[in-house]
Structure formats: C-alpha cells, structure tokens
Length: 260
Length: 303
Image 1 (cartoon, each protein chain N blue to C red):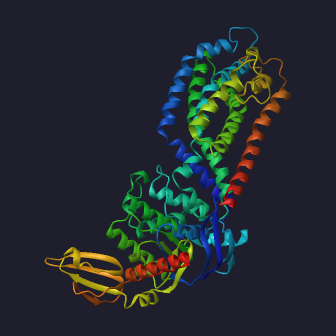
Image 2: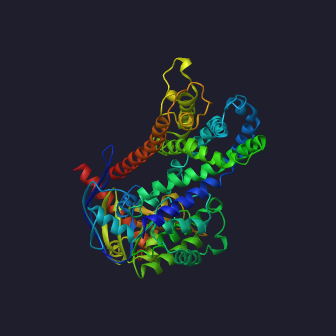
Image 3: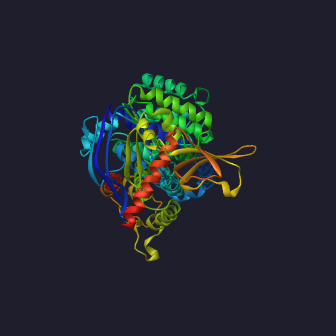
C-alpha cells in the first residue's frame, strides 16, 4: 500500500470534516460582509486616490488589508482539529494501525488547511469581485490570485502548523486567546507603540512584509523600502518554519508514543 | 496465530504496577481474558495492540518479535482491534468512517474497499443506517461500527476489549455469535469482566487479578476446580435461617414460601436450611477462584 494513497485519503476526509462545519461558513460569511463594508477604506489605504499606483499594487494592498481578520478566524477554527482525535477517542484506534502517524499528520495538516481555506477564499473572492466591479476590470481577478497565493498562503501554512502543534500541548480556548493576542502583537502593532514586535521583521506572518517587497503594497504604513529579496526571505521563512514545526511535532508524538 | 507472553511487566508512572510477571500462551481460536475491573486486562490488550510498550518482558505474536519496531508493524498489519472505548468521528456517517479506517489500514483499491465496507455493514446489520451520521448512533450501533472497522483488513488476530459492555441482551447475544463465528478462522482475544460472555464463546481462558495471571486453562478445568463447592440452599426465609459459613452468595431467589440461595464455599451445616451440592457454572467457578485468591492473599499478608 502506498503511503500516497493513505495521505490522499486523510486529506480528503480531514478536508470534508472541516469544510462541513456550519459555524465555519457562518463566521466567514460574516467576515465577507464586514470586508465588503470596509472596501472604501481598503481602497483608500491601497493608495487608489494617489497618482502612479498600479493595479497590481492596489490589489496587493487590498489583499494585505483584508486578510488579517480571516487569518485570525482560520487559526481559531483550526484549533480543535488535533485535540478532537483525543476527545473523540479515535486516537487509540489509529495508534493500533501500522506506521501511519507521519502520513496521518501530513494529511491532517493539508486537509485541515484546505478545508478552512475554502470559505476564507470564497469570502476573499467576494471582496475581490467588488474591487473588480469598482475598478471596471476583470484583470483584478488573476492579479488577486497571485497576491493571495503569495501574501496570504504562507501565513496560513504558518498558522496551521503552529495551531496543530500547540493545541497538542495546551487547552484549546487558551491557545485561541493567546493566538489572538499574538496576532495583534506580531502583525498590527507598529514600532510607534514602543514594544518590540515581529511586525517590522520578515517573521511578520500576515504577509505585509511580502506584499510590500514584491508588489509595493502600501497598507502597512511602517513597512517601507522593503526589497523583493527581503520579501522572498519572508515568504521562504514562513514556509520553512511550518515544515520544521511539523517535523518537531511528529518527533514529539513519536516520543510520546514510545513512553506510553 | 499463537501468542507467547513471557514475564511481562507494565509499570505506569507513579509506580503503579498494572501487570506483574504475566506468562501466557494463547493458541488460535477464541480466547477469553477474564478479570475484575482494574485487573490489568485493558493494559494487556493495549500492549498486544501495539499501543502501549511493556516495561519489561517478552512478547511474540505469530512468530513476530514485539521488541522490534519491525515486528510491531508486521503484527499491526495482521491486527483488528476494538478498543474498550471505541471512538468515532461524529460528523461522518458509518460508511464514510469505515472507508476512512479502511484507507488507513491500507485498502487502496477503491472498488474493493467499498465492497468490503458494504459487506461488513451487512455483517453488523447497519446497511440501512449507513448514511446516518455517527453522532446519532446508539452505544450498541457504535459497537457494531467498531467490530466492522476491526474486520476491515480481514485480520488474523482480532483483539476485542469489553465488546459487550453497555449492550442490551439481544445485541449481546448477536455480538457473541458474531465473535464465535470469527473465532473459527482466526485468533480472537476477548477481554471482559462478564463471565457469561466467556462461557458462551471460549474454550480457553486466562483470569487476571491485580496484574497477575491467576488461572489459565480451559473452562472445563476452571469448572472442575469449583466442583463440590457450590450449593443450592433452601431456607424458610427468616433471618436466622440464612446460610452461614465461609461462603459467597452468588444469587438469591425469593419463592412463595421459601428463599433459595446459590452459594460458593465451605457451607456450615445447620438445621435451619436444606443444602444440596450442585454442578458449578463458569460464574460459580470464577467466584470460587476469586475467593481462593483473596484467602491466599490475606494469608500471605498476615504471614
């Protein structure tokens, strides 16, 4: 039996179980409405009123501006995915099966990520649809795909890995509370506040750093003069850290199994 | 598939000795593991299922050495396991859940997998509710899903831990018959504290108490040990006529004008009641054995 077939099966079912959650769709519908209402402000933040701003810059700026709230929701909705195995008592059953921990973990990661991303992406698409309508050009659509993949996805990968790993160690509501705090501290606190923060570094997970360097996004006002190379570094680090976290997480679970 | 357990120990954190020097030789077919709650049955089942590691001792299943990772993986391929507390994903239906477990067990051909799932749903009589979410299932229905998932890979070794706990009488009988049928062509290890389940299904059994094996052999051997120790005592129902001696009352039945007791042990002679020896059941024999163990234990403690 190929591990690939098991991986695909786990992805499919984890996706299905996450995407079936009614609360997920209700929350993201609400977020879509909020984002639609905030579009005039987003457009202003994107510098649409200024001269010499390209459409790509505007789309990137809007992407950075509207992704902070969905990313928080993604973190919150992912938080119960790992503990639910223990809570539903399926972990004992799965542990009696041969050598599937690494594949199950990888499948859970991808399936949960995609299942949570689906409503988030639909909400984003609605917002982008409005932008295309305002700008009278369908070119917004392919550009938004590029900006979403580059700016938002690395952050989602980052959040998914940390959420799965951290919730194996801590109570889900506590994690959700700490995650929201972290999100504001690491992304939304500018240097003016005087607190040390990740929001001025390549570790900024909401994609402001990536957007500024690659596309010249203007949304995060304190991020200026970022080069594409720095953005590439930010993108790579946001993709490599989750990989590292998942490897550590797998080792931790193996160690835990061997101690039982 | 023969299982050999040699001097097996399991010590949990806090110096809790769940199993102590367990030696067992389990042949093919149905094999019962009986014992009171807390005897160490579930610990032993979990070790055999590869979920827990023993603290020390030897374990060989079907010739595979359980000390090695390779041996454990090979055994897990041949294993079907129904845990004591069988969990499910409540948001999946029965067919989806079984399909998911089948994927994890390595049934990669989609058509063959679906066929197997359908067969097993039929075997456990869940075909008509196969598309209902598992959160709507009763305890008995979930148990049936549990046995179906354990059989997905057509295991050579089936480990079932307290499978009939919480089932109604009809479901319990159905479950026992199903296990007996399965035991004809594989090793089925049935762990329970319900003596009747063993009596109806197993010829061989072991009894665990406080982490020790206190008996292993056939049900006939066990019954033989209690022969001459089981009495039917008939009294007039007054307090003074209750049976006395070093006995355990197994059952009490109030008749129209008398009370009938079934007792195990050394009955004291009395004019107050009539006593007649009777053939022990497996339950009587189990009670006798547990009494004997208690006597030995308290004897050892006092010494």
